[in-house]
Amino acid sequence: MTTGIDNQLVEELNQRELSSLTRDYDNLGEQLDRRGIAIDDITKKAQAFAVAVPTWGVGTGGTRFARFPNRGEPRNIYEKLDDCSVIQQLVRCTPKVSPHFPWDKVSDPSVLKEYADARGLGFDAVNSNTFQDQPSQALSYKYGSLTHTDQSTRELAIAHNIECIELGRALGSQALTVWVGDGSNFPGQQHFQHSLERYLDSMRQIYSALPDDWMMFIEHKMFEPAFYSTVIQDWGTNVLCAMELGDKARSLVDLGHHAPNVNIEMIVSRLIQFKKLAGFHFNDSKYGDDDLDSGSINPYQLFLVFNELVDAEYRAESGFNPAYMLDQSHNVTDPVESLMNSAIEVQRAYVQALLVDREALYAYQENNDALMASNTLKGAYQTDVSALLAMARYRSSGAISPLNVFRESGYREKVADKRPSTGQSGSGIV
Ligand code: PSV
Ligand code: MN
Image (cartoon, rainbow, N blue to C red; front, top):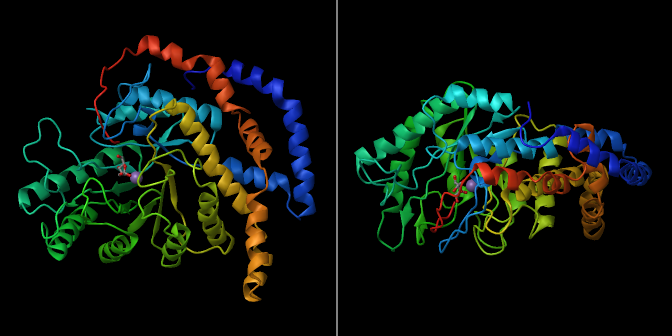
């Protein structure tokens, strides 16, 4: 079942573009053929590629200062799923959503599961939230959650994570992502080692509640909301904790959670080597955790990350199975449009990385031919694979031009009539 956009409109608009797309695709096919690459093999891989959509991403984001609501923004998880299903209907590489609790909590998760099933959507990793207090919460996370000095507060945060696992189980998810903002604003405010010990102690209890076929994804972030220290501040602390906890615990890389200019692709390589890569929260950034659209600021970095991922795939690295999710905040665009565009940019980076002549690259590396090694990567990155991506969508019954179809459909205007404004214009980083 699909909601939202009439499939006939998709088909009609596709037909208008099909002959020019076919010409572009054939032309790219010829170019790739000269490089010994069969275009249809790559297109099949593009069709099999998937990146999950964060439920919070379809709402309008905000900054520390203000949030400017969009017309027709989803008011609850059901409406969020409606928007996610439109994204999947048009781009065909976002079959799963990653929910966040308690934001997406419903009294009966089986109803939610049925709703998602009916729209052809599955559930990816569930995310816990102990970075804000809920209205009726007995104890506050103001001074921390899993690391709080008070045991009862830690127990509340542990219980919430275990509840997330139970909710996720009912939804068919198989991973829990834990990000905590716990930290300090003043030197001396917290004892670094004691707070990490408390974190590990809490995480061990959550870990022991994981079903056999579940994974625990640990997410690090350098700062914010704590501005002097954060308990899991970087990938080093992250992977140490994942190693302490056990095989089911792995490190998740949110692209926005590092210091400026950090070599993220190298972190990815290290995590792959030690079988500790959980997956990604894709987004882009200029200054900090900006949560901008994937590929909008530094597309070459995104490509270089995928270069490491495809390299691991090529070498058939054992136990390599990263989860791909978007994690973005959309303040000035329609979130559905941004998420479609971003999913395609992530898929583009994957496809471009598939074009790298790996054997040639290994030879240049062996012979210390720095320039040719660099040019080998650049050659793949500079290949315009837009026609291939469009053909992948077309062959998977999606839209050749998703943004165009979305705008032509009038989806946003139609839902705006059914979704009166929430009036929530206050600040809010999500
Ligand atoms: C924290 O900045 C983060 O990246 C985590 O993944 C949260 O779950 C998400 O953003 C939502 O605020
Ligand atoms: Mn994240």
